[in-house]
Length: 105
Image 1 (tube, helix red, strand yellow):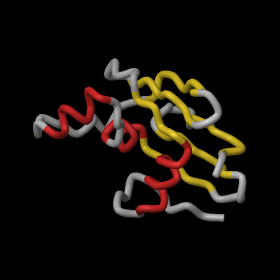
Image 2 (spheres, rainbow, N blue to C red; image 1 turned 90 degrees about the vertical axis):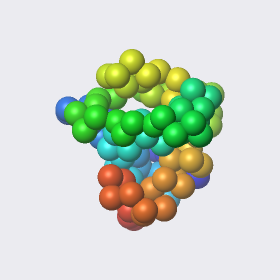
Image 3 (spheres, rainbow, N blue to C red; image 1 turned 45 degrees about the vertical axis):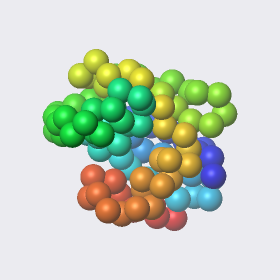
């Protein structure tokens, strides 16, 4: 599934995605930072050094990555977080984290 619209809120603390089926999902910046799967973030999590993202974390940049996802940069300096569309949909559908709104149509 691909998005039809991607927007940051005014404070840059939430990313809202509208999917081609009309469903929408809203992701907190801190949730996305915690869910980053780049090599450094995965290594930190595996080594049990992970520290939850600050609640006032913001998204400083959103860049397309080919036709399959986006790269996000955060106010803490992290700029290697690539989120394929399928992974963003998986985060929203999981419903296990209250920082992400359930996908709704």
